[in-house]
Length: 342
Image 1: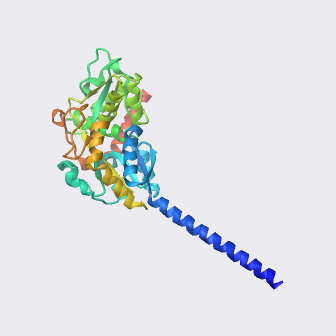
Image 2: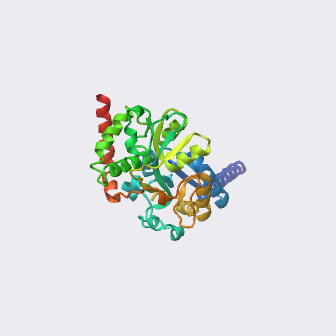
Image 3: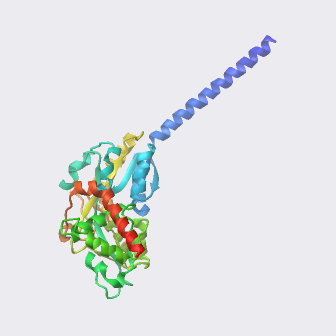
């Protein structure tokens, strides 16, 4: 009897030991996977991100889990999910009100940034320079001349303009800011008169994402659209009959950023991602092959875009924009609702 009992006890102890070993190995495996992983959420076009992510993975051995969505949804997600390590994209003006959600980090690459891109909050790292532009489908625009915002009030364009909801898309919010300052001669309050007329010419069409804007114009669903420069360049590279218009009233060119979730459990990996994406090699590839302007002083622009000095650039009051963001978006929605009721 005692032999049977001893055998049973020995068997139980052996099973417990094996179970403990299994648990320890599982924990170690989980820790190893966690150390070699990074979760990135981004509003950037997928075709823009994939080549850069592949290069990052090859160089660092860190596997990237990518989640794509609009800027507003991305910000909402990163504030609620500590498993998301990086918000990649979204202009500094659009993300500005949420800076308390991000970790301070200064990459050593900032030494190579052009002056205006160095002087940002420590929670933000500039990634690229993103001018707002108008895109025109040359096949269907006909004789309508487009040189800037004023031309978008042409009645022949009613219902033919692609524009995203500025509450969902940072590129659409950038255009709203651009309109207010450009059409208000530097006073955004005076710019609402133009925005009111512009919304009327949208004829109720406000899209859910920035991708619907440039894809809609490229595919001939809309004659013109309000988007960001790199998206237009990508369409041109894909043989779409697109023309890029830099608004003659003035262009707001705001950098977008890379932002580390302050609750990230993979901070070291996140910092490596920031360092890689702002490195000279990555920025040079981004500019030459992907059509996005670099924020580094030692990297030139793509041949598909015009030099910045040829663009009429206008500045905005950054603090005012951040403070008024929700108010301006709500006002836009209110005007749209009133226009729909008429």
